[in-house]
Length: 404
Image (cartoon, rainbow, N blue to C red; front, side, top):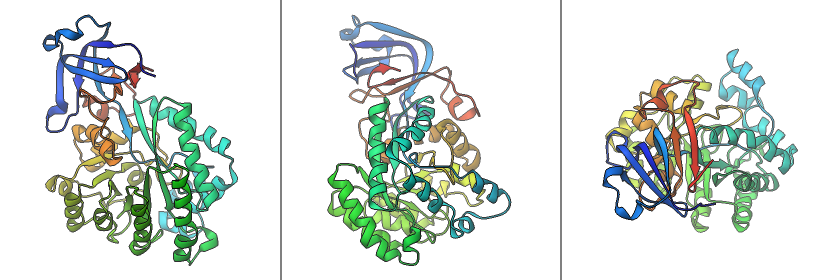
């Protein structure tokens, strides 16, 4: 996909490099791109002479940031749950909806009934919405099949998305998402008879980049999740976890003990859990879309994450029930308005820290040697990206050095 060497000029750069403060802002900047990678970046008047003869393209003073990364999505699924949206507005809680046979289990029925082609065709418009806001990497989870065939089908569809669109897809096996109707009351049997064997088959097909679970009263207990984590470790796969969204079952501590890439949601996380994540280097993935949609009232412990220097990522959690959002820009605004994250924290959360949450070391910042995955914005300052609501200032997206 890479093109001939090119020098982007007349731009303002927010490199988002760690420890560089104020977004890593560089005025009157230039970026040299070769073979899909960043060869050099910095102030134009400090550019090494080697790049002076390269073909130049002026960005007319626009802002350039790393391309955005959505590190937590459930973007492949069948059907929708608009009716449940109505139910919640009439007073039903997320847990009440789930226990009545709605929630995740309702989407399972629709997903099992859909072909891979149908799942792909329904997912692509959601992917396109993210790309239109500057995303270059999307994590996609399974978890709406809850049987071997459908879990593998979802992961195959996720892989196909990367072949159909200029985007990098990281796949996550989420077989421990909910107990399907046919195993109701037999969660342990489901883990042993379906979840773990499905993980083994998905791994054998090369469909899995990481393993996730839902540690919650309406999902799985920590001991059940640990059995899945042990299998993941045996397969050499990194783990992550939906933890402490509705209660505190110690999921984040468990995730930290297994060196998890991330623990996600975390509204009910306590200080001991934050400290465990800090010690393990586990990223806190903040998901304000679910908080907003479910009308929750307990926010994640942002100040504790700051105190213990836990990196915070921000993601859409795009899913048909609790977070039907396909806008990272709106998610960044929600992180600021609902949780009082700063615009710089929100942008770092959708770039540098999101990359870390996916185990990626070649993207998320603008620096020599990194992938040339960039977002070019009609904006003067990066704070504008989290500030506006319902407005997309993207001018263009650069993926592996090629303007889209």
